[in-house]
Amino acid sequence: QVQLVESGGGLVQPGGSLRLSCLASGSIFSIADMRWYRQAPGKQRELVATVTSSGNTNYADSVLGRFTISRDNAKNTAYLQMNSLKPEDTAVYYCNAQRRKIQPQFNYWGQGTQVTVSS
Image 1: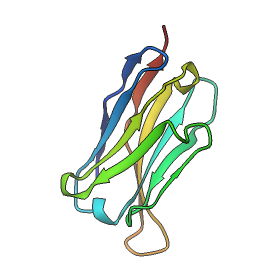
Image 2: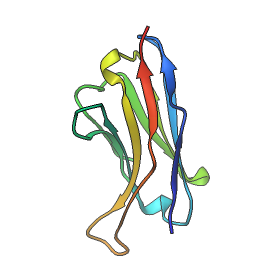
Image 3: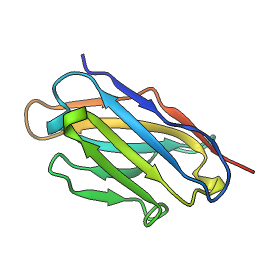
Image 4: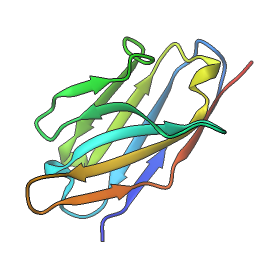
């Protein structure tokens, strides 16, 4: 069973930075597309950023230019560097590891880490 463990969340002032980490157990990390999602109170979960198994990245328009997703396959870890944080970035951030269309297929979620942007 694969486990994803997020860390790095916390309280930060507007304009500040945080780096989230997602550590994956098991042997699937290098073949997984890694994604960060977030869910604010009363809102649907939204996709924030993707880094594919081949290293391609994609971002939501709301974070483009401020957030950077990356991965270190040697450490089985994905990262989300968040700069110029805004109050509207406040949410629980979830890590997702997914592989579709090609076997083995899987879809794993972490437990989430709270990010609060407030003065």
